[in-house]
Length: 441
Image (tube, one colour):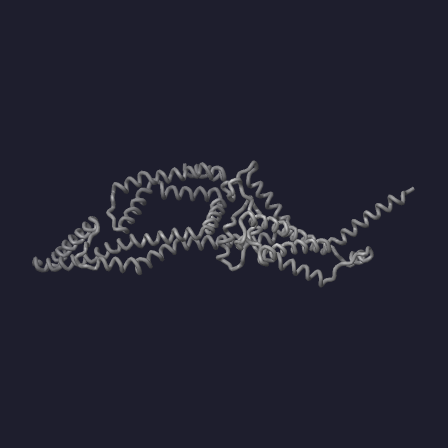
């Protein structure tokens, strides 16, 4: 014989569980709404109704970390509850609504539900639209750091709020070159990828990650172009507007020194000698009467004036190059000082590009760079570069200095290459190092 008290308890338990199941959409929406209200309360009380962002510059970094931690918890709760709300409504049908009515459950009207959803979207929209949030959550494959946020503000006018990044003991963001583990990275990456594919919001994350990668690429390419274009433009503008008129004014006298080094004078003499020999040769092959000394002297004087004017301009141009290069270096350093965030983005960009290459591609690039700069034929290239710089600045090409530079600098550069391969690449991609040694042999 059944115990009626026990049966009544079982029935009440199942009834409560069924009521909890039927109330899932209402409960999930209400919890998401409460979390959105808390976010709005923090914005109103501490950020004057604006977005919770470190760009506000109202609090210290420790206070901002506190607010960011609360924000991430609330945003995570909102997303989870909204996902639960959508999933529970997916299984909702007319029969369940009738069962809820029989169980004494009254759902909120559609207008109130829509009002709450609209409020939630309004509050978290400025955070969920930020593609950086989802990228920074992936600490094992992190491509960016909080400094990207400042650089992105220069690309788009949308405010950006970074999520807090898990840092190491040295309070520096970990990069691929610093990450090691017990298991191979490929296995961990595969597990992470499977977890991401099973996530209901994986499609949105893929789109956001793509947009974030696109932003990183745009910032990096733009910064590289700025590093090239700004010094060049500064050099040309300073040379034409500032340095050029000053140098021409102080070197405007006809009695000025034409040659600023002995090599220029030797080149001028060689050119005059060749001109004289050319005149005599042309006169001989044309069966013309011999040139008189007066005619030859007049032509030589004209050529000497032409050569003197040419080397006078070259000497003035070399002096202008020295001061214009100083302006270029100042512009380059200034650009680096004001673009710390872009430099961090560029480092992450190169980290992603370099370590994302295949092993054979890594080995090919390493061999290419080492052969060009420290290889067997590299001294000839360094010699050409140093002689070009000497001529650019109007300095005599000191052969002793050039040979000493070639004997020391490529060796130092080769040591740096080998240390980098041994210290970093061998730890991150040992197969690439093995491929490099095989190709080098």
